[in-house]
Length: 217
Image (cartoon, rainbow, N blue to C red; front, side):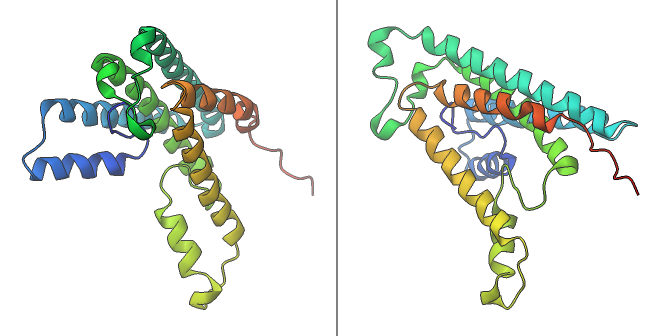
């Protein structure tokens, strides 16, 4: 979002803003390119992962897919580091406006488009794989249904929420990640991506281990 008010993963937000600006008659060519530049790579990533996952070896597709996702996230991180390093010292101090908000004019539009596109492609892969191999009630992008389930199935609503801890944990982790990412922007535009790459590298092996063997009966 710091690279042009677009989301690499939350396509709902991109589509909503695109529609709002279109309806208000304020959809500039720059905004159109920014939104399409995020939505199209996301769809391409989801398509690639879907073709692999819907094949004859879906578990093998997971093993390969998360590694491909990692490659694109690291590529986006490297690109952001290079772009950030190319900003002169006197200008890098003015990279941020008040409250840690990125001054988008300091980052060339082509670079922003490349970074967001790489991330969006990776997130397309991620979401396609999570639909099949994800954990129930552990959301990685949109928490609307998670929050609705947490409240609507709670004891206050006379329901039986058997997974309220998982849902609440998912919401809290999401918020903590957003807070940390925004705080890291105060140091450098590439800092959140560096942190994400390190974290994903740590969890890459567990998520690509493959299916567990069936228990012996």
